[in-house]
Image (cartoon, rainbow, N blue to C red; front, top):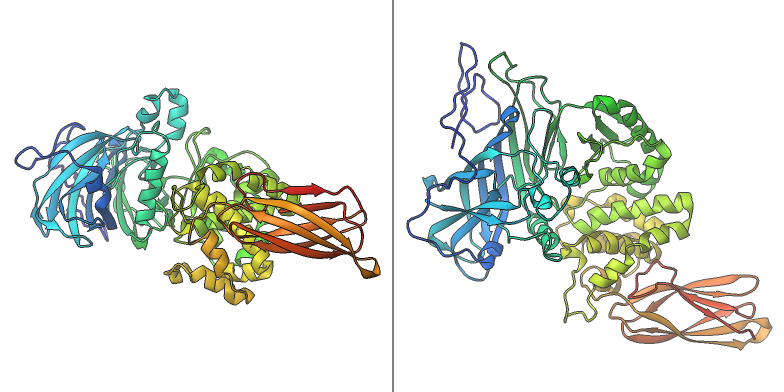
Length: 602
């Protein structure tokens, strides 16, 4: 490990620093390794690492101490990585990976160095399209469910790279707008696994062009890490103005006062830190920048100087949407969401925790409202469970559309994602792949399906009951699968287990509904009893609206149809029915989610 010795002791850091009375002096213990230089290898030629060995490693905690030199685009880090053998067989070795521009320098266990072999493997989990993999032999195999803690020193550079995208034919400008991660003097942003592997991981190599495997592996990693904790201490060297905005693992944090200011020859030093924090469904990430801060209405906007006027419009948009967010999610004291202005106008937006990194738009407040309502919903509600964390924000966004454009527009917006959901869902649960919401790693489940689920719960439990449950939700208390169900049941006084069993705890696919028949019959006092036969050929039980329409009015009732079932529901109507509608698009189905039967008359 190469250490810097600086003229100031930095609080909270574990890198070596020394006090001096003379001018600050930066001393390197060695030159940075070339990207393809291998670290010391264990004796003998190791067999190729298997994917089974990689997937068995579950990292439960990272303790990261990171030193940045923005001028050299470099990073030196010391990590304590706590991991568990999540497989069924003992592990005789551990495989850890970093970006191919970073090198493993020292690995230790219980204070003793371990020999290891470092190889380069192809994987698009990193923006370079390659990873450096350290294969670490263990003196004693790690038993299933047993844990150990490794000390890992590593370093190298993180320049802007879009190699994985240009390799598959993307134009340079398009590729760099997507893969904008880097360490630099004006902006440092590294988003973590799936973009830049700047901390040790154990993953299956994936390629962008290999079907859905790339996105599945990103989701698998986030799912594995959702109960993991990460602590982070950052030391940054600067030669001009110091950064004034820091975001660690999706959390806006306060930078310490500079421990040293730059001179003509030596850098200044500034630090920030975050204690051990549960990651939830997020990848560890790091942002440092110098920005103009504008606050208001639950929103913090960190803008480039040129975008200061745009920042004011975002805050104005927050004033428009804040009443809706408070109605549904409550007014939490100090809850704020952060928008970080990215360096280039065409940089692709990215969301992590309570932060949206995106170029600021020059649109007016009304046009910015859909973006801001999603942001404020994230600021007011967070959950370690992806289906709630992402689903609630998307749900509130559709409520904004409903409030301003009508229910039909909101349902159409939601239904734009139904075809992709229908393709992803298993045709026969138990015989083909699917994902229950508690363990969903694919966005089509934890965003699209979760939004539908919350719309259905709005009807099943009642609007006020769902509002109360969302406002009472405490992420720290969500330690068992039934937590949110029980919270909602207490609020509405209804048993909702049947719903959660079909839509949250299990993936039973989607219902497949049909109006099998309509049978009106004349009753006394000029009333008509309309019998509607409904079939469900799917594996998911559903409660849907059933509407009988006449020339002068309509009646709607909610009907629960069991999986692979057929029921007859009777509605008393005051006139001769001319139309019967089943579902209104709020319950996703295998095919169309609206069924209409036109009657020929009496």
